[in-house]
Image (tube, rainbow, N blue to C red; front, top):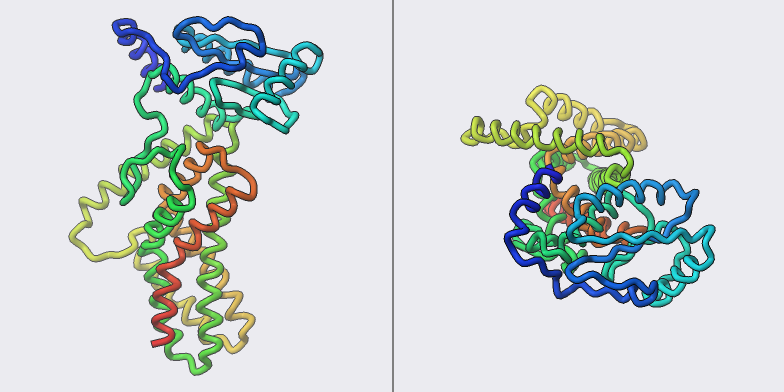
Length: 348
């Protein structure tokens, strides 16, 4: 699809004047002593000869070089066996104040990318399009309530709060929480009721958090392109199926449609059994298993929200501890409505 759209752009674009974006600047050309061609972008790759990720990027850049040959020049610098190139890379790193020593290192404009993955490939290609003005707003995304935002400049914690809070309003988990609260009302031991309810909420949050980490892991498996194609096809089919089901059942008050009445009755029976267990430990273990299974089902209901946010984090190159912190903010606001409902119900 990308190649088809690009071919259409190639057919149309020669009719207009080619000009690079005002945001493009190339300071590396002075360091490497390469003249800039007018209306062309320079991309610099510093790589090691025996580095497998470097080899992947070189193959990818060869294809990209063909696709964007009217807009792009690519320069390669092997640094493991060429001391002059190593010195050039060190000068470039000093300019950008980079501390890492790993390769591949890709420089385009004022942007730099360590390592190679599908995520980085997408970022580099989008940056090429941005600088070549092949698309108007490559970093814009329309989000619920917020509207259109630039995902390179947006406050990530704020987006986590909004998307997490919206994601939390989901009938697939809310109905079982309400039923659990209803059962806890009849417990004479209020302390035990609070512990069971809070355990359900805590495990729900942990499972959803781990699920989002799993989504990040899948998106990070950059060498398995067919896996992403399968995921995309699955999401598209699920969207068509849910849209069709919505028009068919929109006048019926069915709540969560992922769990049918038969499964719902089984869950209710399990809840009764858990609450009535004399052993406190067995009750806690039961509620942990139930909370985990229900929230995995809920993820199927609202897969889009976690996927959108994890993609925003990837585009902004948020990794490591900072990514975990942002995901935790998402989970806190995802659980906020459940916590409020549970607390008010138990107190009043």
